[in-house]
Image (cartoon, rainbow over all chains, first blue to last red; front, side):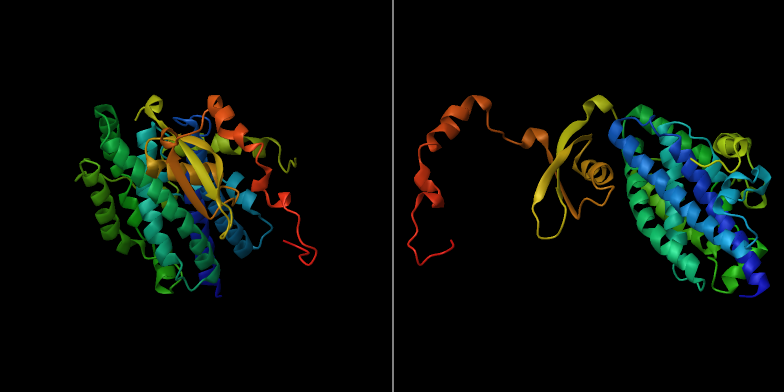
Length: 254
Length: 95
């Protein structure tokens, strides 16, 4: 592995780890607050899948960095400007409809992205994707199900779901942006060219929203910045909560 | 979506191919599809199963405690329905 590829892959694994950890943490905020017990357990399982995925990506990043840092250093000792997650993942928990719409957007994206990533020339990235795609197929089944139920449910659930779609839509454009480092990895068959995923993503999401009697937004209002470390104020709040124990008691074991 | 309107389902899990589905517990869900997903999430998260059945609890017709006398007691004095009632000829060692 050349130095250039190694550095780009380290950055790439960190980005994907950040996406997984931040979304996993957001989902974990539903633990004990689910609408009923069965859903509480089910959604917690999804949070665990994401946090597990973050560990795999961070573990690989730590291995590539080879500077004594561990997965915990990546998760707990970087501040918001160092995080590279997509903004969609850090948006607040919101109400249940909001969380499920975000979940649908993220699950469709993950389905498309991981199906490409399993073919990566980097065998570690391919293996993480192979494990992740199985989990993601189930996540998508759930979030699709919920958006259909809520969108085509009561007047109240329909309104809340449509509002969530409209509020989150502007954060989905950045999912398909490519920077030069990502392009470099894609050219070498290591990273996924996510710009090619926009059309199939739009198609899949539109089909589900339409079936759920929801309107597909046509606004081009777009927010960007996650991959360059420019975040919404939500990430800082999330990190303070997630990192406080580790930062207050460095190296603590129990 | 109203939590009070959820229906009760019984969950049956097959732990291994070749074994029977066994009753694992019950859960609430809106319909069969959701019940199957929750059964997966609530009852197989430690790899307990390879196949799941869900059935609405109200669709199960159960015997009643009041019927116990007429259902089961009459069988107590019919030992000839057990193989052990019969004396085996010596040449038959095992049956």
